[in-house]
Length: 108
Image 1 (tube, helix red, strand yellow):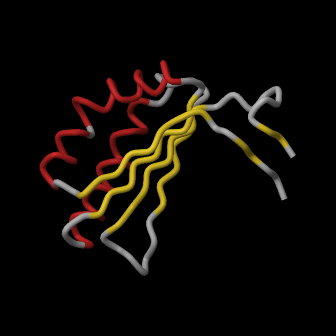
Image 2 (cartoon, rainbow, N blue to C red):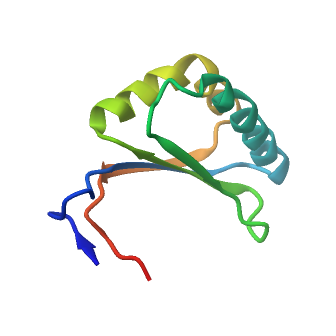
């Protein structure tokens, strides 16, 4: 078990939860993410992006970023401004963002 004060736990999370008007809009946005982010590979060393899409709520998705720190999160936001955000603005999902230092983690 590791706690927030534990060595090696220093990570920053940024989670985007999006609810789109339709399944089609959500799938279109997922396609954009899967096409555009790989083109920027190598620009965020050590970062990880995970996409969650539940088939029972097909109009909803989450993008879960694990980053080194807040500075890298800001760098990720800058990278997304020209490529990802225009699509997000056009599709206009209801969105909630949560970000902060990883407080606690446990492996089972």
